[in-house]
Image (cartoon, rainbow, N blue to C red; front, side):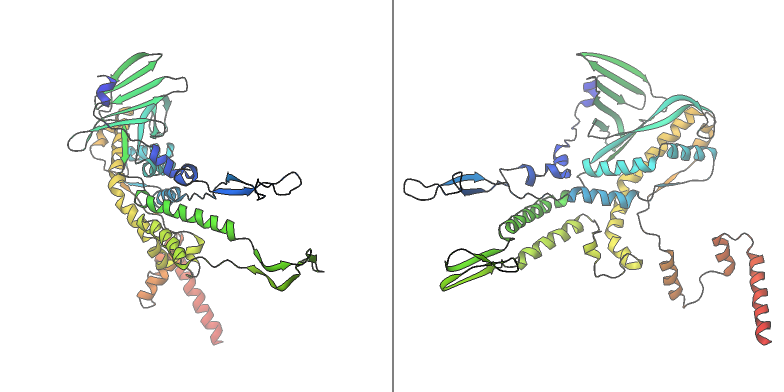
Length: 452
């Protein structure tokens, strides 16, 4: 097969629009001067001394100049992705199965590859670019890192669309039947690698010459886990973010024009201004003149309300909790108990909804790792048929056992939830019976002393 065979009919993802939206410095409000033009202003012309220059009609001369707009970009897109990733991966994914040497080896692979960090990276990439992949491969090295002797170590690599062009192909049942990845090295080589269940193809192009290598796929599975979603995480509120940036920009422009005190003088100033003892200036006016500061009006209430609504809608429509101090101000101890759980419920529901993407992908990761392990250590092949590993995704929350115990105790009529013996065991006391007897003896001793 050729490179074109693997590319045919596949539309690769154009990440350029997502990059412009994600990176605040590339937002239209900062870069698109046709949509948001710099204002033109008239500057009076003066000579070297500062006297105004006059035209032929003895009128002051002006020059048209362009002043930079107070452009304000708001990194909502990055914030939405960061919070979504935190709620999904701050508590590392867990894998549950019956204890066995193969499961122990699997857990060792996860730990050795620091998958908790990779999972955060993968989550961010798929929410930012809509697609990312992880590739598993072996490196030859004698070791016992997985609890058994092996000649290989199992490694993984994250294939981000920022650095790699991905070509996944699916059958009618949405099963991955081939996967290809293309990249360019620092030396200018183009590397195109394609995977099927039977073979692995490598095409290297340098100076117009392509070399091809084909080898057997020993695990009989495409060693790639693909994660993808339809749109970036902020897609539904992109227009609201642009409106919010425009509002903040022109609000800042208004402050720039009217934020400083404006002195209004009615009538004619008599002579020069004098300075009083406190350092201020005194204006002498005649003919009933008046001098006063003009205070700009407060912001339009409807305008302020619209900015607040946009901020709320951006968080609400993306199921992103507002974690700002401003949100929690005046709400009491919102970060504990039921109040916190209600505030974070949308984020928890989003994690649950995303299981449709991540649980099948994690299950594929499990199958790929187990397939490699069974080839790296042949006795594992017998366990392969019986092992059943389940991935668990737990949304982030703050541990609050005290609040939970208080709530359950109240629901139980104030009675203890567990026995003293059970409480001691959970605390780590290895001989609760001896401790209970000691407590009983001390209570009896105290009663005798009180009677005396």
